[in-house]
Amino acid sequence: MHDQTNSKLSALRTAIQHAQETCRIPGLAVAVAYGKGPTHTIAVGTDEKGHPLVEDSLFPVASITKLSVALAILRLSDQHLLSVDDSLRRFVPDAASAQSGVTLKQLLTHTAGLPDFSEKAWKYDEALNWQIQAQACLTIIPHTLPGTRVAYSDVGYGLLAIVLERITRRSYQDVINELVIQPLGIEAYLGIEPPRIPAMITDPPDQHAGTPLERWNTPFWRSLGEPWVGMVTTPAGTLGLLRAYLGMPKDFLLPETRAAAIQDQTGGLGGGFPWQEWSHCPWGLGPMIITEHMNHWLLPTANPGTVCFGGYSGCAVFADPAADEAWSIHGTRTAADDWHSRAFP
Image (cartoon, rainbow, N blue to C red):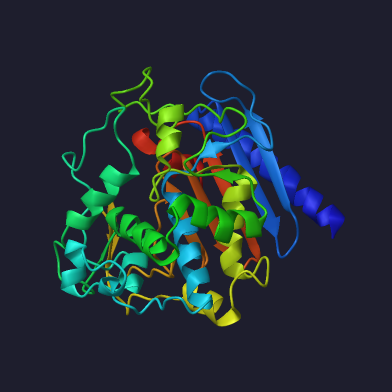
């Protein structure tokens, strides 16, 4: 078994180096786990500033942050402090979307009919903080009837963070640290400065590049710790978030909670993202679920039942129960130029 794993890791390193060279990306880091075995991390190349990538390099994981929010909600469910079928109104009656009958499950599965944040939701400057962003979440109403389609939105996870705060009377960052990061034994940071500088990420469209407000790379951005995009972690940490849905560690979630979380909870709805939609877009209680012939843009040949999530900062995480393996991929450039759809497969 040891020789077989070494053979797989050798082939994986060759594939990573090929993707790096073909897509002209300075560096890539991949964490992989086979079955219930340990996580192995392979790092090649450098970040965008020429710093060598290593196994425990930290990366901003953008939307994969949402998995930590979802896991915190599920752990509170296991503690009988909420049910995913509860209405948002039960916990956040002052949210405009609560008046539309939105449920926590709909927020988790992007079926609440919510739009994404507009550019006018807040001013992105040094005065920005979570209180300003939370207030924006409370004012946004569904654009479509809740429960009728899948429409990916950051707003729902902002509202879930508010739910965490209303139930526990603590900051959602502290709740996620206590309920998710520490029990999983991963190195991850949300709203606090890491002890070492994360890998530098290039984001060509960022109008604040080179300033103290630069996204992904500055203490200011990291201090926001936004529940939909703000986590910084290692490749192994990213993988740990998704493996939690597969029972690792086995006592992290109740078996029935895990089983429900990786099944389609949309009721067979269609929809998806602005750049790709499907007539059937399965979504679990946090992760997306790939079905047969889905032709997912990051993994067109995925086995049915694969659960996954991607992040605009240049990362993705997958778990394939059929192959009994899971992996996370981290690059040093955002998805702005679509390099990841060429490299990740």
